[in-house]
Structures are given as C-alpha cells and as structure tokens.
Length: 327
Image 1 (cartoon, rainbow, N blue to C red):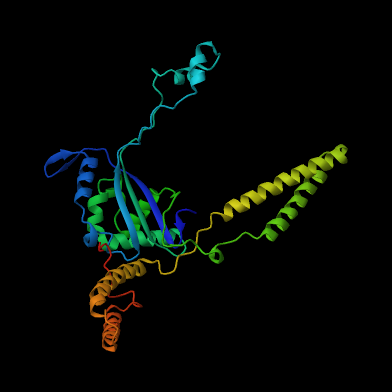
Image 2 (image 1 turned 60 degrees about the vertical axis):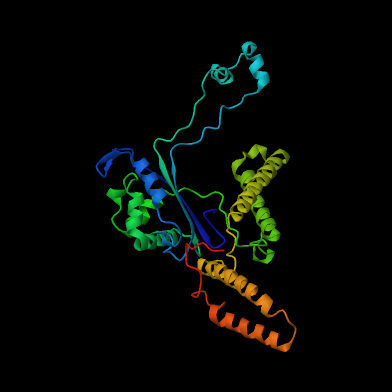
C-alpha cells in the first residue's frame, strides 16, 4: 500500500483543468494560463494555505500540459537492415521505417497535479477525507482561487465534504513514496516478518487439499493410479506455490511502522531546537573556554536557562511555525 507508509499518507491527484475560455478582469483567457499565473503568485512559507494545517509535511501544485515525448521506440537494427527480405507484418515494417511516424500519447486536457504528505495513523480513506476537510475549512478562500479553474469544481464543490469528495475522485495510486524520518533504517524488530513455519504449514495444507481434489474429484476414474498421482502432485505443488507467492506479495504491501517523533509538530520542534542550540553553542564557546569553577557554573546556568526557555520536551512551543524556512 504505497499510498500509506511510515505513519504518513502520500496523496497524489491529477485534476483535469477546464479548456473553456474564461474572462478575468475583462480579458478573455484560458483557464490553464490563469491557473499557472495564480500558482506563481501563491503565498509561500508561513503564508501558504497549507501552513495552517498542523499535519501537512509537504504539498505541491503543478500544471501538467501534456506527457513528455521520449522519442521513437528503437527497433532492432538487424531487423531494420533485413526488413525488405523478411515476411513480417506491415505494421512492424512501418515501425522500423524511420520516416513513418509512430503513435504518441497525449493528454486530452491539461491537469493540475496536487500532492500532499501528511500525518496518518492507518492510511484509511476516512483520514484522507478528514485532512482534506480540514484543509478546506482552514484555507477555503485560497483553495477556491486555485481549484476554480478545474473541470467541474464550481458545480460540485459547495463545502468541506464535497471538496474532499472532489479531490478523492481524482486520486491516483502513489507507487513510490518518499519518507526519510527513519534516518538509520527501520530496526529489524519493528518490521513485519514472514513466519517460515506458518508459510510451510500453510503451503503443505494447501498442497494436500489441492492434490486430493484433483485426484479424487477432477480426474476421471481411469486415471487413478501412478499417472493420476503425478498429475495431482503437480497440481498441488502449483496451487500451493501460487498461494505462497500471493501471500508473500500481499505481506510485502504492509507499510513500515511510523518513525518515532516524526509527526509534523515533532519535526518542527526538532528544527527549532537545532537552530536555537547552534546559536547557544556559538554564544557559549568563548565564555566557557576556561576550566575554572566559575566558567563551569556559568555554562551550567546558561544551559539551564536554555532548557527553561526552549522546553525541549514540549512540542507545542516554543517551536518553528509551519511553512517557516530557517537555518
């Protein structure tokens, strides 16, 4: 389930943009041009409409006009040289001919690519919808300015629930999420492990049932014997092998567990403390350079004041604001 992993939901959507000419400020224009212009002017950082949500790690809005053309499909050069003499299909001959155009994929209209990574406990649709409803409640005005250029938005979206439904209908599967809060990899004891004993016993049971069904039920009576037994065993091995393969494939879809202290408030607090402690260390390195007791006491008092002021154990504050960019 790549859409959910390590305690985060990776939302990916492709929302069609209208192609009907609109009028803005008395000037006819295309929706995709107006959308691109508005995105270029959208507030960033702390003023971003996504910064009001305390679960949102990343969000991105991009206009996709069309798919990229990767060039011609390159055929086998030996077949190209031999094609006049080979009795091959005319369609393939056309593909070999460099002066005959090949089919190209194109989008039927521009699309707004909207992706967001946010904290999630289970990766359920309900959590996705709750995130989208909160986003709408917190930033409705700014979101309307963006999504109003999308096909069917004005007719379908009336409130937070309909906005969540509209975006969810345009969701596509996230096949390769990026989550780097497990800095040193997931510990082995945190990973779900396949029990070889369970797999072995389950496979053996499936083999026995499948082989018995084939031998006593599917095979005609005159095949009961050595040949029938071989057919039953082969069928049982095939069914058991397929079942084990599907089980392991499904098991591999299980998400990694959430990394400790990886929610947005935890990350913002960590960024804040890193910045503040760097400043503290710079300020103290000269004052505490001596080895006398007075210098040690000053460093102790300064560090205690730093702890009291910055409250490392309190993620609520003081902390870095969502959307803020600091070093």
